Length: 52
Image (cartoon, rainbow, N blue to C red; front, side):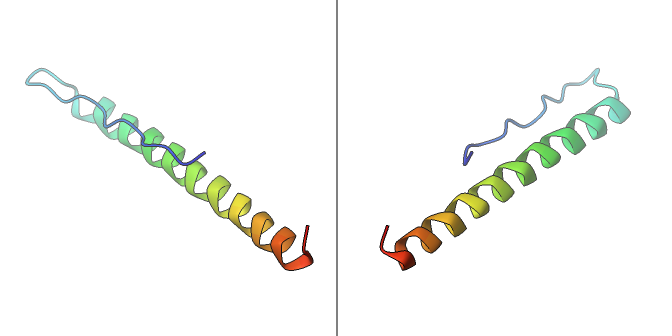
């Protein structure tokens, strides 16, 4: 869940459009990680509030 997402590598011969696409995928993955972490923490708070 909560983990780093690697930056796409950029070099002198990199295709800018491909790198933009790679960044979009990396951002989507990072957002998914944040959502999953948020949901997990919400569940933990609910279980703690119930005394479970």
